[in-house]
Image 1 (cartoon, one colour):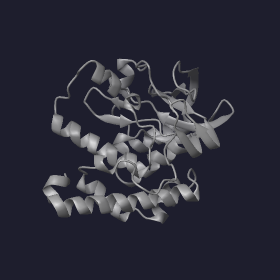
Image 2: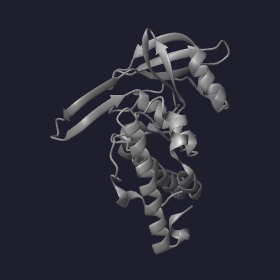
Image 3: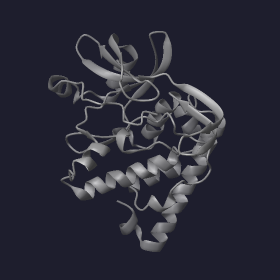
Image 4: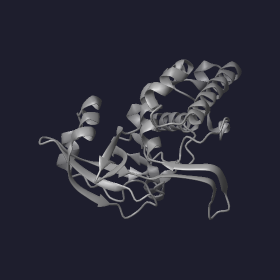
Length: 264
């Protein structure tokens, strides 16, 4: 968990931002896997001590975020009094989130992420999003999106994915917003609880039709192929139960309100 987002400043120069704007997804993953490490710096914020890694392949230079946290506690007690059983905080979930996002067509909202060893530590290495605000900054500065319909659709989509992966730490500081008003979800180390229910079903009001169609066909072999290396069997089972509940939830909403009011 980072609590204040992955970035406290935009480290990429404008030149770097322009240089990486057209990089293909497959090339991004290859770059993350094989790029030469130039520098590694611990970020000043974040309880999991994430590190900013600058990579280069001789042509492209770009940053990534490295997290190696992998903790399990039978009982975790938080300062606010909340108690969580079977608590897991793991870099594996960053990769699982990206792979499942790819499987349901939401990789444009979750940065590419791979497993890699950095300075003798194994962890997740995720593409650094060149962002202008996080949601906390946007709200504090009272900045309104230029297209409120598109903005709401992005939020509706994010909420569906949050329930699918049971992301218990989705907050304003790990939702990054680019200059063209695209929302990116980062930091999933506290996702993938083993909960077999929807956490906040009342917030699931609308859903992209394409996403709902993908969820209908998301089965156990697909999840295991995509993320089985990073999820335990009980975590995969919970994803599949929540997938079913999400589909049932939206089918009921469509029956009640009509497809035009629910799907986009």
